[in-house]
Amino acid sequence: MADHDVIVVGAGNAALAAAVSAREQGAARVLVLEKAPRELRGGNTHYSGGLLRFAYDRVEDLLPMVPGVEEEVPGFTASVEPYPRDRFQADLVRVTEGRADPELAEVLIGRSLDTMRWMVAQGIVMEAAFSLSGVRVGNTIRWSPGAILRARGEGVGLSRMWFDAAQARGVEVRYETSARSLIQDRRGRVTGVAVEGPEGFGELSARAIVLGCGGFEANPEWRARYLGRPWDHAKVRGTRYNTGDGLRMALEIAAAPHGQWTGCHSTPIDAEAPPYGDRKLTDKTNRLSYPYGVLVNMRGQRFFDEGEDFQFYTYAKLGGIILGQPGGVAYQIFDAKVTDLLEKRYRTGRPLVADSLKELVDMLPLDREACRQTLEGYQAGLAGGAFDPTVRDGLATRGLALPKSNWAQPLDAPPFVAYPVTGGITFTFGGVRVNARAQVMSTRWTPIAGLYACGEMVGGLFHTNYPGGTGLMSGAVFGRLAGAGAASE
Ligand SMILES: Cc1cc2nc3c(=O)[nH]c(=O)nc-3n(C[C@H](O)[C@H](O)[C@H](O)COP(=O)(O)OP(=O)(O)OC[C@H]3O[C@@H](n4cnc5c(N)ncnc54)[C@H](O)[C@@H]3O)c2cc1C
Image (cartoon, rainbow, N blue to C red):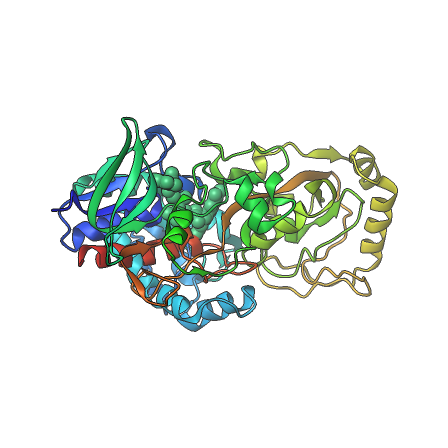
């Protein structure tokens, strides 16, 4: 008899959703292996903003998940627009340039609302993500579409609530225990894992294994191998433990690779952020209010249409674009007209501040002459009109080789501020192929018996870019499916 019914590798959102789901579906002995020590547990999930993107037809679908929301965020019910499946689908297809795997996208989007409800039933408390994606205009709030709810306490809260839920259901968690390789029987069924733990090496058997142990974002050698230069130098926004172990183990037994192995999620972060995520700062090094300002590189030039779209549709690709600039650093410049609009997270930064734009440029360690010309060119290209941060306001520059397509206002109100930013890697897009039941597919295009995958390990959904809040949703949807599938083995 196997030592366990289900072994789940990893202890982030996807893995713990799988563990809880496996218990719910009747697996009695569920073991979670966490490579990190207890004090560093929880993977990228701990560092996340806890935002969850899901499809719903009416605000009434949300209200049972956030009782009391109207007292916490007055005007919530009246301000939330529907975000039906076809809108989520259109967002995913648009930002991934049509490459999101349609079968996986259908599972993700189609099961997103139901999985949110299931998470709430498992004890994951939700709240309105107002500070992240809401802008109050008079008595009403404008939300970034689809980005309405997050776990209470953000990633820290989400991780803690998942551990609590797992513990309450009798799931065993072994810390400082990493899976090293998968064990198969002669017919190819996965029957266990080889592990390394505090007592050394060992083998554990199970009727099914769920891999939920993240991508390879914290592995500079793999980053160099698959993402290329300059990704080996990237700062890691989250955990240091996601080094591609699960992907390596799965590929070793002929799992099919899937998706964009040269792609990753990467965002503009404080240039002074630490090399790996800070457990207390978590995602507060993000610098996502660039649509309201001007972004220049060390050559003093603009290199990105800051107003291409709302931040949640551009931020996940902008980190990599910044990293590709000379020195991997850029400056976000704002004037006093918009400083109230900067996300609260900017408060963790140390901006350069000056009373005139000229003085500000004089303080920047970049090609100042070129920067002055860039800013003059930008100001000369402004067309004028009404600025509205709640919609794509069409306030675009005219005649610039690189336009700013929305929210293009003059830099004319002192004081002026500049925030240094670099690109931080969040997670990698390449993964293994899974089917609609989260079973890992082999290169022979058949499911590998006894093996499931979820979370960042699932390849094919994201390419080049990603709509904010989709990673945790994907982890929960495929984690839940993986756990249920594993329990049925
Ligand atoms: C700063 C930041 C902010 C983010 N904000 C959001 C957000 O608001 N919304 C959103 O949708 N997404 C967000 N993301 C992305 C999202 O958090 C992650 O993609 C998601 O948490 C991944 O979940 P996961 O369970 O697949 O992996 P993780 O949560 O990273 O968990 C992987 C687990 O596997 C363990 N592990 C690794 N190797 C082994 C091994 N060999 N053996 C055993 N265990 C192993 C790790 O220790 C960890 O516990 C953010 C990410 C970061 C870093």
